[in-house]
Amino acid sequence: MEIKDNQAVWLDFSHPNYQRWLRGRESANERAIIVNKIISSDNICKGLRILDVGSGEGSTSAFFSESNWVVSYDLSLIRLKRQRQNFPALSLINGKAETLPFQNSSFDLIILQDVIEHIPGRDSLVNEIKRVLKNSGFIYLSTPNRFSIMNIISDPHWGIPLLSLFNRNGIKRYFLKHFRKKDLLREDLSQLLSLREIYQLFNDQIININTKEVINLLSEDYKGIIWSNFHVKLYCLLKKSGIILIIKYIVNNKPGFINKYLTPTFFLIIKNNPFSNDSIR
Image 1 (cartoon, rainbow, N blue to C red):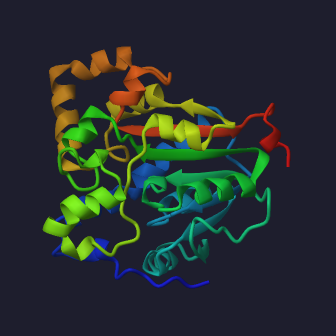
Image 2 (spheres, rainbow, N blue to C red):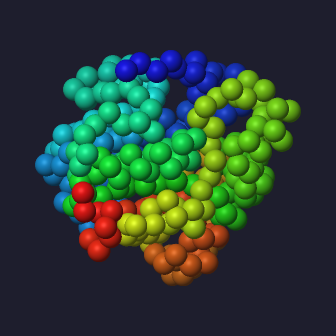
Image 3 (spheres, helix red, strand yellow):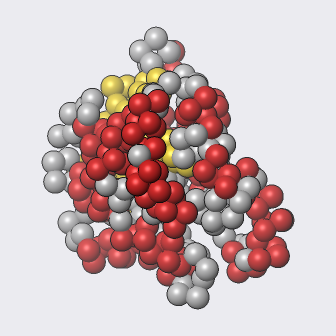
C-alpha cells in the first residue's frame, strides 16, 4: 500500500524548523539506545516480534532487529526509502497507523516513539495497537507532555510559547494561518497529550511511568532525550547550577503533580491488564 508523501517538509532547508528537525534526525541512534535501556530495564528484548510504528529514520528498528524480528512501519515513502538505503535488511511497510495491515495478536512489542501526537485518529490508532498486540505483549510509548511547564514556555515542535496547549485546529487557526501558511495542509501536525488523556486512551491497560530512569540517563548525556534549543539550554543550566541533582531526588514514577505538570516527555511502558476482559482475545 503506497501513501502519497507530503513533500517531506522536514527536508526543506528554508523551513524555520529545519535545524530542530535535523538535530532530531542526527540523534536517532542515541534515541534508539535510550528506548532499549528503558525497555530492557524490566523486559527481555530478544527473540521478539516487534512493530515500530512511525519508525522515522529507522534507527530504532535497526537497533532492535539485531536480536529480534522487526517491522518498520511508516506513512512517509521518503523516510522508508532513506531507511532502505541506510538499513537494507529491514522489513519495511508503508501505511497509516490507524489501519494496521496485520492479524490480531501479531506482536510482542509495539514501539510508538514520539508519534502518537501526530496521528489525527488517535482512538483508531490505539484500538489497532491493542488488536495486533499479543496478550503477553507490551507497548513502548514516548510523547511530549501537553501540560509540562517547560513545553508551555516553548512548544517542543515549534518553539512557541503556549502552543502546546492548543489542539490541532487551534494551531492552524491561530498560528499556522498567520505565520506558517505552508504547513496548513500537513496531516501530521502535532497535538500534545496530557497524562490524563493517555490514561483514558489506555484505560484497560497497566501504565508504567519511567521518569526516574530517564532522569538518571539524562544526567549522563542529554542526547537521545532532548534536542530543541530551549530544552538543551535549560538542561545545561540546570546541570551547571546543580539543580539537576535536586530534580533527580524529587522525581518519581507516580501519576501525580510532577509527571502531570513538570515532566516534559512521557516515557511509558504499557502492558495488558490480566484482569481486563479486553486482554482476553
